[in-house]
Image 1: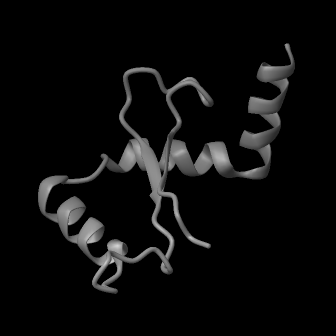
Image 2 (image 1 turned 90 degrees about the vertical axis):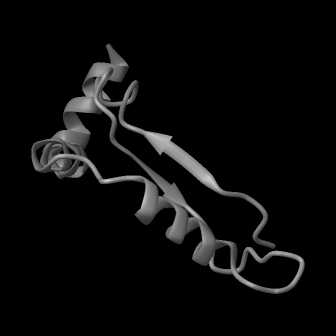
Length: 79
């Protein structure tokens, strides 16, 4: 049963405090009462009201998700 929208960011997890970069997961199966997908409306609102993160911030996010980045974050969290 799809019932939740997940919203997360790199702020605390990767030390991106002050840098706005995150993600949202809207399940395809999440529907309004009339059967239309929530994802369609969410995408429309996000793409018309948000210009996106800068290239350098996006590269930083991808680096965090790389094997080396994940290892470094895990080491910092384990400290």
